Every structure is written in structure tokens, then in C-alpha cells.
Image 1 (cartoon, rainbow, N blue to C red):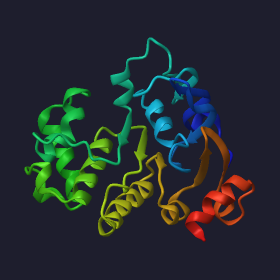
Image 2: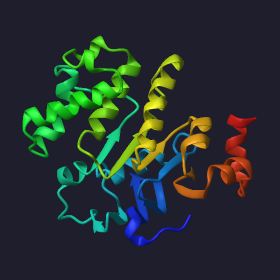
Image 3: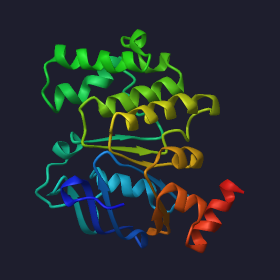
Length: 249
């Protein structure tokens, strides 16, 4: 896939990250274009979640550079909160604040980071909750919602600030199987809206159907990347074929 540099939302250059003596990311180079959906696949411990956390500045990198829309966000001078207002992230565990209503969860960043007036933030929050069928639960607390509803609310919270980039970290892995479809349908809708998404996932069928590009991580490196048709249908690397054989038979 070829695109002009002006279309890049994210660029990772030679990203290294270790925890103690364990190297988790080893020289990652990756560019994400506007409106692109990129699926990160790989075994547990391959570095998928760590990569997403470094992009959102939750984990500091040891070496390399991270560029967001042409700005180097990996410098010590970078204000993390400002960057996180531009990047939405959703984890496998919903991380909704239990003492806040669903609407307050959804509007928190808009009100406190973007300084949006409460009325404006709540109007947008209610619009988004209506779109995903949760408007009637806007004033409820998270423990009144099913796991699938909580995860959908967490995704809405992440997109409420109109982020330049949305990161999804195994967002269905903590859900009962019957709740997975409703969450993936929401992600499909975000793709159709043109949202730029990087998602770590073990849902291979979904990655094949929705992603524009699939990136296979193996032991902290990018072992292979390409279109879903190429990676799933004709993987070039033996490591990719071995990994996919566990899922695709």
C-alpha cells in the first residue's frame, strides 16, 4: 500500500522497549495512514499490547521515534496528556470509572482535557450513545451494563474527543462469546466512518474481513505484513504460517 507522507497519521521508527533484561519490542518500523485499519496479530508475548502502550505514551520507549501527524511525540518535552487527547485507546478490560455514570465516563476527557462545556460534551456523548443503542443507560452506572455494553461504552469514550488515531487492545478477549459480535459490529461501523484504527486482536476472521493491512508480530519484531488476502491466504514467512495454522487449520 502506497500513500503520500502527508496522509500518515502515525510513524514508528526503530522502536525498542525492554522490561529489565527482556526485550519486548526490537526495532519496530511501522507507518499508519489516515483512514487505515491495521490489525496486529501474534502470539501472547509478541509485543502487541506493549506496542499500543508505547504509541499512547503509557510506556516509555528505550530507543526510536514516534511521530503523530508529523510531530515527534517521543521527545522528553512532550506533554503526555495532550497527546492522549489526540489518541483514543480501549483495553480488553473496560476501565470505566465505576463511580461515574456512563455519560460522565464518555464525556470526562472532553470536559477536563479539551475543556469542552458540559452541555456540549453531553450532547455529543448522548448522540454517540444513541448511535450504539445505549442512550437509555446514559445515567446508569457501569455495573448495571453487560460486558458487551460496557466495552461499547468504553469505545465511545475513546472516540468522543474525535481522536486522530484509535488503538484497540484485544477488546473482545474478556467478553463472553455471545457479546463479541456487538462490539465488533461497532468497530466495523467506526471503520465505515473513516476512523484510523490500530487493533491488536486474536479475532482472525474479523481481521481478515475488516483490516486494510495485517501486521504479524513475532518476538518483538514485525515478521510479516500485507493485505489480509496476502497474509492469511499466502503468508510468505514460515513463522506466519505456523502461527496461523493454529487458528485457520
